[in-house]
Image 1 (tube, rainbow, N blue to C red):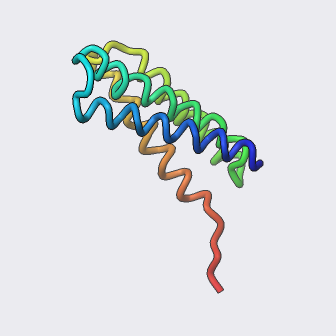
Image 2 (tube, one colour):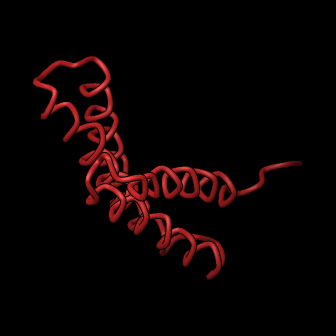
Length: 107
């Protein structure tokens, strides 16, 4: 479990770096788009894929796999296609599932 969390953390940090690079236009427009609109979503999808087996219920697990798939597949579509927006849907779904899966520590 700890190795999986470390891997997921590294992937998430690299994904955020890709997003930041794209936002601040540190490279050519083509590279910025590649990093912030493609590589970012692929890395987040991989992170969701790694997280899916550790979800508390099978329904959450399958939903997390679906969110990972939407991120990755959406990132592979041409940027100007409207259907490429499914990557954002996958991102939001994965984030919601991640927060929903957290243990409740109320006393």
